[in-house]
Amino acid sequence: MPTYRDEALVLRTHKLGEADRIITLLSRRRGKIRAVAKGVRRTSSKFGARLEPFSHVDLQFAEGRSLDVVTQVESLDAFGPALTEDYPTYTAGQVMLETADRLVVEEGEPALQQYLLLVGALRVLNRGTADGPRPASMVLDSYLLRALAVAGYAPSFHDCARCGVVGPHTAFSPVAGGVVCERCRPAGASRPSPDTLELLGALLEGRWVDTRDAQTATAREASGITAAFATWHLDRNLRSLVHVER
Image (cartoon, rainbow, N blue to C red; front, side, top):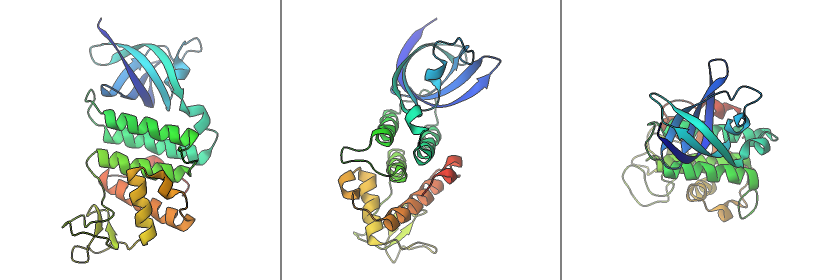
């Protein structure tokens, strides 16, 4: 039976039979993988604890007819234990896993950027940025904006998202794809503060230094806009997003 190895992050698991699980992973080389982990629900399993959500692992698979089979697991990063100690951090991490699962649809299709982005975001949740720690909700907002951008839904926070007229502009519409000029502004567009748009731009580009002094009200408004943008472009609500403390 042919085998292969890959690094991956566990997104979710499902019970299979009396002792097995189906593991859904986002991998470095093969994108999304669904594989069977046999016997992992038994107390005698050698690697059951390494195949829980948030586990960053190096795996060996045996190719199967419908689902591949996990034959070996080595832990790279155990993000889960640290995340579960803090509710805001844990719920933010859950949204990240669900978003990655939603954005990477096709199994076996490479999704290296999404994989690296997710692993990096979980590391920041655990350890903070090089410029110091940031609130879990802010890390989540940065991840959502960047993951959507990688998927082809990059928001504009300066130039008009519809006609391209150079900004800055004051209206924002998730439907339009970002800020819009007065000519393109649809009904229901919000008018976030200039500071909020600046913060959103920094989060999209990963400029953590520029987020250091963000006010609470500004960060809260940015979170609301990010959630609305993500919900629109993912077609339906992220189930875990309602549990995030903002």
